[in-house]
Length: 195
Image (cartoon, rainbow, N blue to C red; front, side):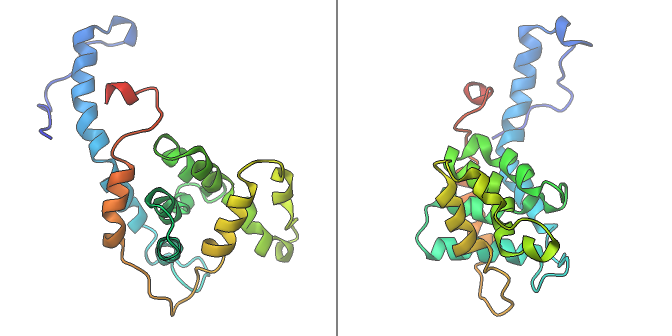
């Protein structure tokens, strides 16, 4: 996709002054920006490389292991991408990393996959919260949600066991086409029609 001329800009100083021509200009600039989203996500994910945070593997390797396990287990591409990106919020939101990842994924994935990513932090706590003086059964507050068991399964099968230095993960490059396809177009967004 050809990028629009960088000097082409809307002419308003406040949105109340905007015209159809202004918003056409902005839309032309938005399309290539949205198209480049998968690469920005992958670049951000690479920030996790080398950041161990005390874990046996760095945060990128943990994400690769989680996605590799899901892929090898036959999960669909969208699920695998969610597994890859589930902890991408660690750098920007260490206190709410699951929310950061879930917000980025939400327009592009199913409600259940979004729910899993959004809630995996508290569900993952089942494996260690009691060592920190927290309630390991905090996830039980969500027992009546239809995606409860799916999140339990995600954490048990793919997340909690992906800290193995001897595990042979697929590379980030292996997952790149999957990320590109999942982020090709939003499934739901106020802007979906304009893209």
